[in-house]
Image (cartoon, rainbow, N blue to C red; front, side):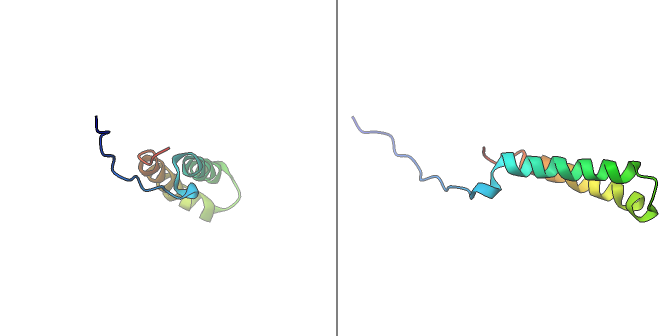
Length: 67
């Protein structure tokens, strides 16, 4: 008889969706790998692990977001 009550879902902004942020996280990880493999600047090599770690943490968090 009565339709079940649905809680109103909040819409996430488009830039907070899983797809675009997962691509951004993958790009950050790839940047960290390129920084690790380049032979020119020691500063880039030094920060490469931190950049890869940040991208990995971002990917793990973003993978919980709604599609």
